[in-house]
Image 1: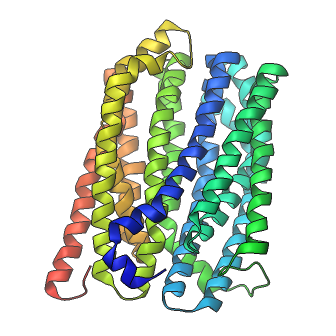
Image 2: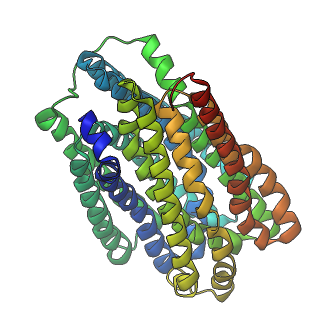
Length: 445
């Protein structure tokens, strides 16, 4: 990574690092959408509802994985910017090892908790059966998913995002083919979808390991000495990502609980289908975030504080434009989209009437997410954690437990835009504080 090139071609480098990451993240989200298409058309709405009821499990894995990986890659990136390659490799190996151990322990815990979760949600017998069939397999796939994501961040940090993009393309194509075989040909239902994800994840992991064994120029797999200092810094730097994903875990559980209480299984299905668009959009924003993290941490490590701030401003403007474009697309295609997954008219009407309201949140969520990534990348975990907590937990839960009880399904759709709009005010507050410090001469951000 060249500092002068970054200064001269900031926008170009943001896209150069982000586009492969965005493609990788969107491809990852497309796996979920493709799975939903096969489940909706060959299993039914109950299958989609069952998968959605277990989303807190997925977000729990992502929370732990992102906390360790984002925190670790930020530390490694700052060491890289300072020219300390030995520290880069130490952080890399400790991060990967920690991810493997944490994901294995989490699988054991979640295996024990599957039945209690179903009992708490009071799911009907058919939904409960689909839930157990799907997540009994996914508990073996999810650790592989976050290990692959962790490796991918270091591949991008090394300046080779295109390789990880190719791995993700292979993952999507293989997963789609296996979905077709297991679900349409072999009639394995949700179990077949989970097995397809597991097999494609293992193949992707083998391709990633090949990269670090044969192609990597900076990060090398090898022995390391455990450092509690690195561990503490990793957790602290990645804490906002953990809070963000844990907040999603809690909020999705709350969403499902409230929707089942006030609307029923059809409401869960409609919300899950609308959520596919939100998931793809959030993956685009996360792609931008993960793409600029190496640029931000490298600039900050090189003491180019104003450059880091300018990268954040430019990226925020880009994601705002993307959010407006996706909202326009939803306005034009909500009727067509509602027919892709289910045949039930009641569910389709719920999707058509609420999707546009729900998508207004895209105008705010991108700026909130990128600013949170920015503060994480420069070691300011407190500010990042406050933004993540506001949008993913505090205001979100207040809205979840109040708006649907008053407005029914329309209240469900309003939760996201109201939450993101309030959080945007907090985001602007922290940005303003940084500008005040800059004017006072404390440091240039």
